[in-house]
Length: 280
Image 1 (cartoon, rainbow, N blue to C red):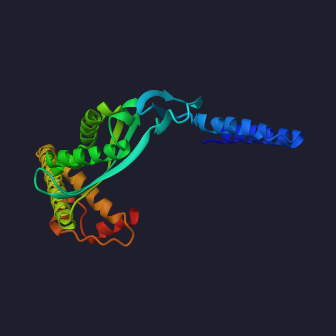
Image 2 (cartoon, rainbow, N blue to C red):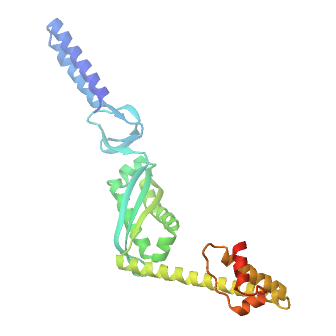
Image 3 (tube, one colour):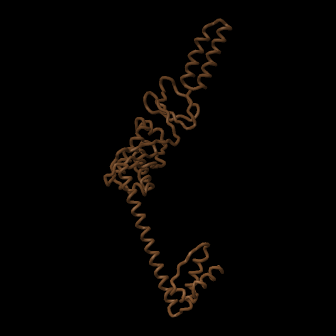
């Protein structure tokens, strides 16, 4: 039933009534009403993305649409309207054990499309529900064959495997799977805490390794520097004076230097230190 058929029905019926009113002959009403009812029952309209499955005396006759099409009332019937746009189905697997016996809740989305409306109507009952159940059982099966670490680290591979397996199941129904995307993987809170502690310990281990490597490099540089200062007292004295200068640059800084170091640098007594401080 559609607006165009109703419009034609009303036009024919009103035309018959008008002629009857003008002539007073009811024959026009009896003649036009069957025609109006036939038009109402015969005209069908499918949207741009739809296909109508027409059965003739219970057997498949043809696919009709999009647009207007005609059927023979009583003999023909449109039993199913197939939407050929890309459809989205969400599905989940709750409390499913992974290969390493970890219970997880997985939430995923399936994008699929009917490419053969005849098969979708004739080969499976309620094809939308069939697609949803096929996706859910496949997800559970793949979770059972996958380690938790693999599931968390390599979702793209699992998405591709899901798409391939589900598409194999739905292909006889005239349905193709465009893509599958895992939206979320939930694990028990106790396991989350353990994984968090493990990750923190791993970060600390790496930090200690980096710190040890830095200490080793620093020690190597100091060793190289000591060889440069060895046998060159003047260079060592200049380095010591530079260190003292850097310490005295800060305002209000107090530097305590052993008398032996002062004598080594040739700065003399405390007066020499005060002079150096004023110059800075």
